[in-house]
Image 1 (tube, one colour):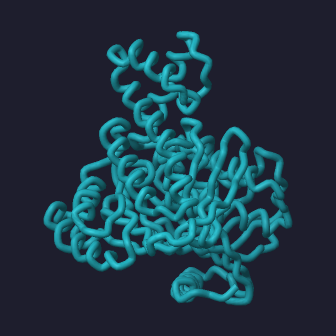
Image 2 (tube, rainbow, N blue to C red):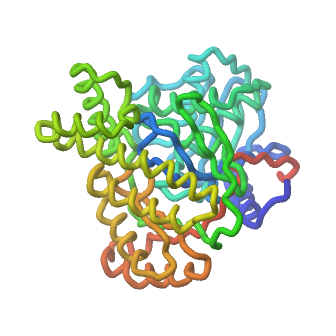
Length: 414
């Protein structure tokens, strides 16, 4: 595969990091893993909904090669203060321990731990250098890194996993069981299965992935990611964890009341929904607000999917905006800076829809924008966002993204 200009710039940085830190990657491979943009249902994965999204062209690159010994040696150009992460295979800190809480090394530690726990025999480690340009909230940097490390370490050990959903499960287990982050599967699926120019549709009941072509005649549009410059803590330290627990609590309450459900996504029937809201809407108002968002988002989801197939990107954008209102008002997972970005771009003609992205609180918002309006969006953000949040005036960014393959491997470039 031919290197893009973005790839070449990243490789130049990686080679410098390699030289400066004496990590030998000469003759190795480069694995590139994408970010993702969820079109629906944000926060639906752990509630059991169907999912739809795309891989986007902000990436993590890892240059690596097997080292023939039982050690991992890695350096991240994004976290230079952590220095070189080096450890013996099987010799990692305990899951969820204080020793891993503040270092990006918790990801390679977790990959080693989970792969061994699941019976994959690692005979040799890798030497590697990592660099990425995925914003730190809203585009799934942690899932991209986990997938990159898993696939690279398996490759170095000659281990092939044919069922891609097993790789998704492993990446989720790293975050859930080792790090303590209560993420679902949305991020991993949209990255691992991402395909250039296509939407990825996941049905959890079947554990199936299908690709959906955008209908012909669609308005020329761009995916715009609006990085607020804020730093979002890991999901284990955020409102995301609280919201997930709330949804699980409501499911438990309803099960005890003899509702035959296993997750909030099972509540699709209007009569059942109205009965639940009448019975529990006052006594569990906050929990029922979470259900209100999931129920409405599921109904919108199928309308959005049909609009995508028909090339009706205007309706896709409208639903994206409606989801944002629900995430803000009913799910209550957004944040001040995220909503400022949405408020700013909503005023620009040609913006079809906007909302917060990802885990919530901090990080990035996103928008679907007519191609001819992208420059106007950039100008609006440059003018208005620093006025509202001067503390982030030199940290925010606007990313104009394309739909890309989630995973690529390059050889012969080092």
